[in-house]
Length: 160
Length: 142
Image (cartoon, rainbow over the protein chains, first blue to last red):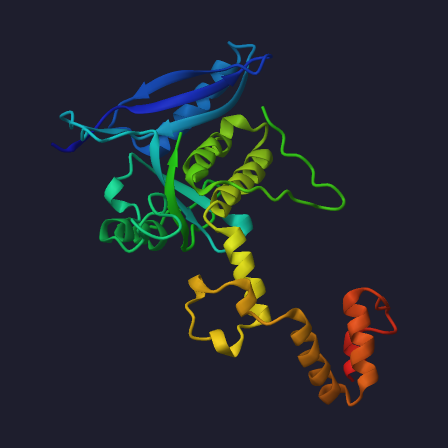
């Protein structure tokens, strides 16, 4: 089992007069460097706009990897149960990272938030938080707006 | 799509009591508001994302207990109950606010050098005799 490269995916996002959204998908060879792929995406966007009366409001470029064999999920797994990690010290600059199907063993067993709060001292969770906030492989994560995540503020389980 | 609303001239908020067992479901209900596609513009998205993640964080603040503890900390525990564990204390085990005013009187007397300062400051604190630019708490302590 291992992660293998798949084709790059370019996606153009469209919105019509009713607010309905759709997209165009274009694939590029996995060997394409990302600078070339982005230039291709922007050029294709200009050409596609001439074909559609909808508004092209965004574009994505995804470098994709996938497992070369299908790993089996654990019987108790449930993606409607998320671990949510909320980062930041300033209440106006909080950011969230979600972990689907959080392990039940990571939930605190006592205290006012028993069964809801995550055990931030659990080694697996502490290592994940440290990698997000302080970096791993030479880089730390940021929030959707480019700001540093900062320290972990709270961690708990949500259900959707 | 959503437009982030303008704050009113006098900002306010609503205190909502969420039963603790509903925290995972209420938090999960906010998840959709973290998505770019829900919001009209990038600015709406950033404001909306920040606001709803803050609400999700607030669900873990145990706010009412924190508020009660803050008020009790200001009042201070009575000497007879200092050894009682915090979680076992009741409201009667804490000093009355009138005790605090008594201590405040003494403190202000020493700082300001006279009873008249304490009387005036307490009137201001109680809103009986509002502070003005010419008569404020700091001036009274000089």
